[in-house]
Length: 238
Image (cartoon, rainbow, N blue to C red; front, side, top):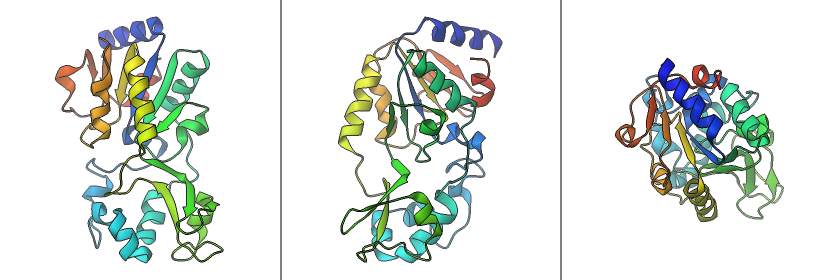
């Protein structure tokens, strides 16, 4: 790891326009479980498969069971940013980081101080009534009994992208533009198997594509530098 870490340090020092593209592995060291690892949600036993529960059609057909799962397994409140979040926020303050592109919905990048965060899959911190569009906090949803309801009687939906829903095209455009302008792209904590998010790295045109992930990804052979390490151990050195 030492020689690779030295290379990474040099590239970070030289970079002027870093873009960081992160997945669930960025937040696991804050205590938030991921989906696809051995201990992830997709490998736990539920009445329905998680992919089914967090789909748009299930949300509409069985809102009680959707929110029972969502509040227990997908609404991470009270967690704190870890070293990776904090280093990225520092880089942005120093003018080295163009943007954070994230598949996470926990808001920890903003909590660490990052400003330009492009959330491909939305955020649990934003919630709105499907009828009148009034906004509600994550705490309101978490503390509600059963299905959270608006004053008008409408169901309050988390502003997260469920299965069967499209990603926000404006966020996708801004992420693609940032990646295309980067002189260094760090992809970390993601298996790069979820589309269309995984395809975003195709917009990178530079020669400093760094992949940091505990397990191999489909893009390892295309990267300029690959570290199969824990994110925290790498970012503590940066």
